[in-house]
Image (cartoon, rainbow, N blue to C red):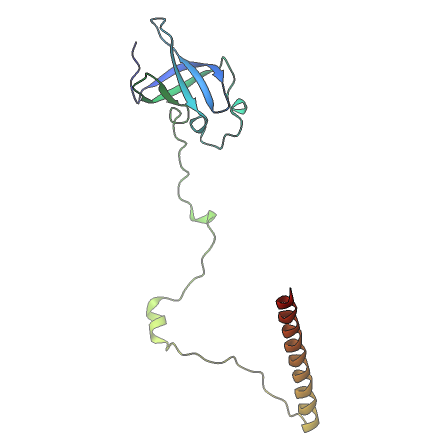
Length: 157
């Protein structure tokens, strides 16, 4: 029996190595045909340890990927299994997007920057306004001083 590229065969895992598993393909003529399933072709999920997925003597389905000029057969277990059906597209599982205004409404509004609206200023006395100004100025000066000290410290290192 000669194996063909792209065909799926039944086989038994004979040996397991760090990089793959050797599979004896079932043969009605009692010829021994052995191919290798690389670690990347064992499963659709990440395979760190092959022995977590297969054991010696286990029956498996394999697909022939290629046969090189030396007669080495490259096999795949993940391509031999049917692909899992994708779930139907359901928008309820996707994050909600912000609803934008319809384009017609956006075009009618002028795209002009407007400053933030300030709350109405209550009648403050001159002393109150002066104390507020001093407090704001001191806070700003402290921030500036702190930033320049950090910059100077980082330059010294």
